[in-house]
Image 1 (tube, rainbow, N blue to C red):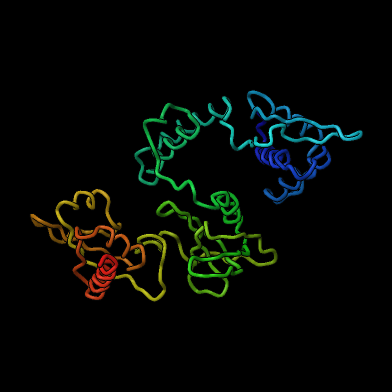
Image 2 (cartoon, rainbow, N blue to C red):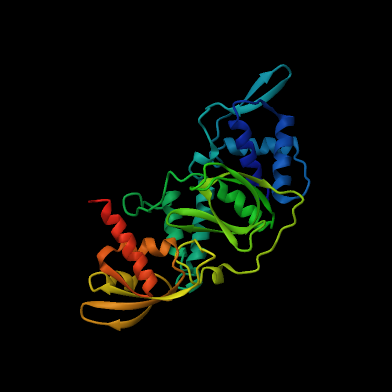
Length: 335
């Protein structure tokens, strides 16, 4: 397998060419397309030789490569290239033996960091990769919870790149509560997953606070050429310090909330705290009272209401009344 840093970019670019049923890609077209793909990714101009592309095509066809059904079709004195199977895609194939071995080695290196707090995601990541790429027989043992119907997951790679490259983007977006699309400039800072959905956080032009955008509501986005990138003035750690979930209403402040939890639910809440600020302030035979320091946002109310009669907000009074109001409104739906 080719080991230079542009190899994967070339393979993916060629995969898009061979999958395109609406255009014929001759060797000159492939050279231009692949060179442009590398330039867009790296920011530096480059050119690809015929010899390199022939080597790439041979590798993609090989058993140690992607076993791609690439065929050349004569048209006059030239030939264009495509996949013989119109349903083939490189991304749909299982990784080859060389890639599998490299991935196993990488997972062994990551395994050395298990037990360190900042690397507590590694065991789950390792299991997901082993299952996804069939490195171990896990199909009937472990099942992960994911939303297979979530739109725009393919945007994650492109958004990660613009965040890393510190580029402003022009976004076309349609939120849940709007009938029409809107177009705006946003300076992207980071991505966050919550409740099986992905969100992009950044500074939207004309707004003082960060904006969060659900990936599945993005229509399209492009690089905002000529727009200087505005760096973040806050850190994600500080931003989410008093939040449950992802929404942060600008009109609400962090508050101390006291919640009484039934003894049947307490073992669950104890092992999976509602928020890092969770602190026990009273322990009784039938209940436990905890204290949270949070912004009472949409996700906070959804979580409290989801526990039903097993929890009771004690303070502050206005949050207690809001919970009561929402329970009563829900009750009316069943009258």
